[in-house]
Length: 198
Image (cartoon, rainbow, N blue to C red; front, side, top):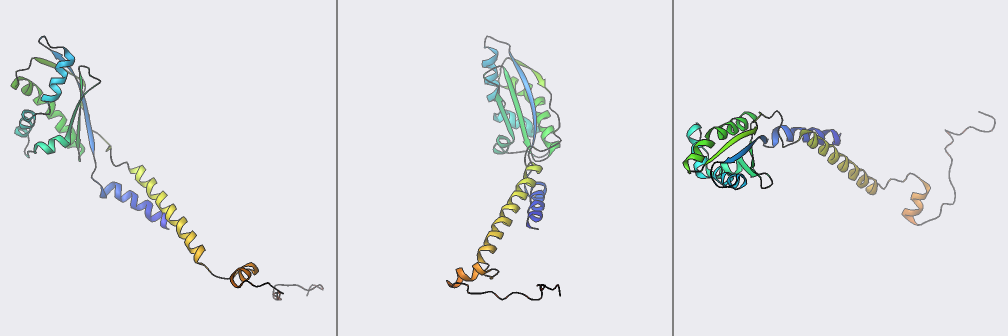
């Protein structure tokens, strides 16, 4: 019963008790249009795309604006192994919001590059796709964890009950409890059959 309850609790926690995280990912190829190398330009763009200009440009297109701190938690931009590739990951608690924010970022990138006077172009290598499943929490993991917790609680409960049980069920229990020897035993005649079979 405990295992069933904790398994159900794991399911409910995964689906209703924890904020979901949906990730939408896109990858860009940065090309430098001046003497700076593509990889160096990608490093510059990585910084520009997490700048106040980017966040202000996004807020202009959104009905509800976010603070810089909220954008920092929501948007992660990384340069892939020091190359000219950038990976943008948007983390939101709704799948549609994650996808929409990623699409908006791609839409305002040219404005941000231009506003800083950078000479760069970009190509989308990986188009954003609306996520169908959250990256966290993993429902199956929580159900399994709930079942394991239930098993552990049940096992510990059985051990505790067994240790606290002082019911005498055998001759050895009397010997251990009172430190005396057993001299004899009265048989249970209701269950015995005599030698004549009566």
